Length: 90
Length: 412
Image (tube, rainbow over all chains, first blue to last red; front, side):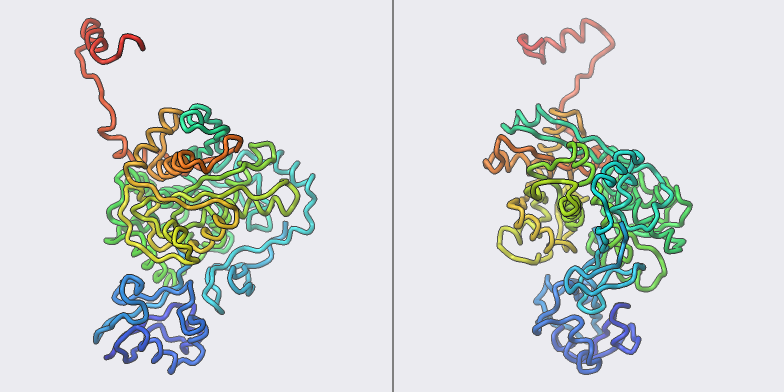
C-alpha cells in the first residue's frame, strides 16, 4: 500500500531534506517502520521505547490517529500521513 | 535580567534565541531561560513600582535584552475584591482579576504584546496566528498598530462578535472549515512553509511568557504577597502554567515569600481533555472533539496539558469541568454580584469556583483569585433570553401598573 508521508521542517535534517516521501504500509505503525528503515536517525527523534513521544502528533487524512486506533490505525492506498509537533497553539 | 537561551522543557537541550519552538532532539516544547543571578531584590521591586502602567513594568522578566518600544497599552488590569460573590458562595476573601480590561478585551493582549515585539526584533514583516477568537482580535489589532501585515486563522463557526472585532482591523482573516485543532494543525504546517511570525507556533516560547505578567500583577496588587488559590481556565494550558511560573520566579528571587498557591483549572465539560486526564490520574491528555459554548476554550488537543496536570497536582489544586448550563449561570452570577460581564470562558471559571466552594474544597480563611480572561460582549448569545424586559408606552401610569405586577411590594 503506497502512502504519502509529510515531514515537518524540524525532521527534515534527518530525512535528507525531504518534505514528502512515499512508503508502503497497511497501518500507521508499518508506515513509520518503513520510514525508520529509510531514515535511520528518525526513530529516536519521534519515538521513545517503541512509543511515539508525547509531543508528536500523527494524522491520517488530517485526522489525529488517537481518534482512531493509534499506531494500529489502518491506512489505505494513496492515503496521506502527516507528522507534526504537538506543542503549538493556544 | 539576562535572557539566556531557549531550553527544552523535556530534555533541557538549549537553542539560540530565534523563531523556533520545538526541540530538535526530542520534539519537546522550548521555553525561555533567564539568568537571575545579577538581580537585586530591592532594586527589582523599586523598578517594578516605578515602571510604566503596562506589562512593561515587568520588563526584567520578559524575553528581551532591552525593553522594546511599547505598542498598545496592555496590562495593569483591575484586581477587584468581590465580597458579594464571596458571600453568595460562602467564601472568605475572593478577588476577580479582570483581564477583559485590556486593549482588545482579553488576556491575549499580554501574549501578543510580547510576541509582536519579538517578531519586530527578529525582523519579521508578517505575523499570524491560529485562534479561537480572542487571539484573533489581539493579533489583528496589535499588527495594525505596529504596521505589520497579518494572517489570522479561525474556525469557521466562531462567534460573530469575535469575527467582526477581528476583521475591522484590516487583517487577512481566514475562516477554516473545521475546529480549532484543525486550524492549529494547518497553521503548524503553514509555519514550516512561510517565513512568518506565527505568534503561537514558531514564536510560542516568547508569546507564552506574556502570561506571566498576570501573576506579577496579582502579586503586586496584593502588596507583594501571594493568594492561597488561583482559579483559572485551561484551553491549551499555557496561561495556567505560566501564571504558576510567574509566581515561582518571584518566589525564587525572594520577591515573594511562602509557596505557590493551589492551582485550580477550569474546563468546559464539552471540551475537557485536561480535566479528564486529571480525574483518571493520567500524565498526558487524550484529545477530544470540542462541543461547548465556551469556544475560546475549545482546544481538544492541548499542547501544555501535561504541564497543567503537573501544576494542579503539585500545588494541591485540581482541574474541574462544568456544563454549558453551569457556564451560563457562572456568567450571570459574576455579573449580578460584581458588575463584571465576562465571556463564556469566565463563566467556566466562576462555575468552577462555585463547584469548589459547594464541594467544600476552599477554606473560609483562604484568599482566592479567579482569573477572568475575556469580555462578555464577545459572546453575547449567552445572555440572550436569560432575563425579561418590560415593554411599555411612554406613560407613567403604564410604568406604575407594570411595576405593580412585577416587583413584589416588599422590595419596592
